[in-house]
Image 1: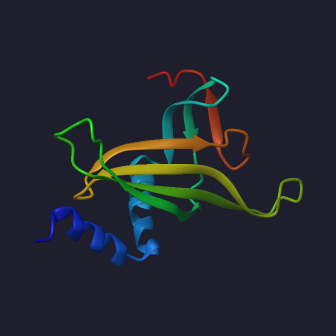
Image 2 (image 1 turned 120 degrees about the vertical axis):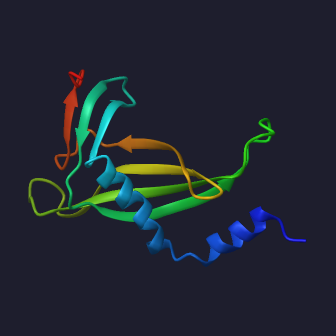
Length: 135
């Protein structure tokens, strides 16, 4: 007897990584290419970060996990995307430049659970507004 998880895992293995980009693209479009309330690794708070609409997305990795301590939880699927942008500025690195990673977490039915960000707030390709959003 094959479990639901095994069926989902087999389905996941059949998916072409490029087809998973739609999840990240839809998420960015839903958020209007903005992140509200971000703490960087130096404990600086950014009320709003705005990404360019011309981002390239690459699936860096995916994983399937289960919280063994929470008996009611189902399996979770994490998709980690690398967000890059093209730069033609000779004073900056020309070519593709990584500006962030976005990890989207879904349940086993691909319903959204959470997101995690690692953003290069120093990148000239993004607008990072320090402090409160004023909302």
